[in-house]
Length: 116
Image 1 (cartoon, one colour):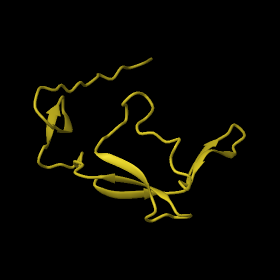
Image 2 (cartoon, rainbow, N blue to C red):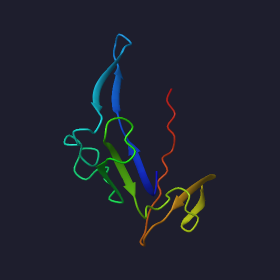
Image 3 (cartoon, one colour):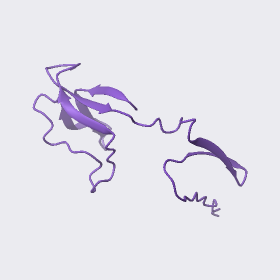
Image 4 (cartoon, rainbow, N blue to C red):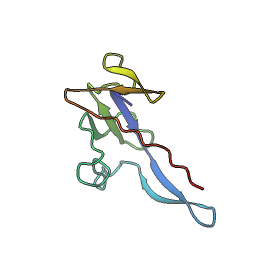
């Protein structure tokens, strides 16, 4: 998901119960708006990417009259950006990284622990 419009509709979140049956725990079709939705993952600004915006839309609704539109503009193509991406070999491991902005950065590699 990068730049452009992305439409979702008829969201149904289910869990598998202990008796191996699927149970719906959240459902929304966006016909009454998005009052119970908020941006991010729930802790302060965690999970918020301001390059993406969202709104209820009447374009491309799967059922009913409304859907949710997530749109991105000028979002970098992280992970495949040849202008800033490079490979570094560290301890025999070839790592890909992209650097945006200026300053110092560190890459930490933890040694694998062996358990008996």
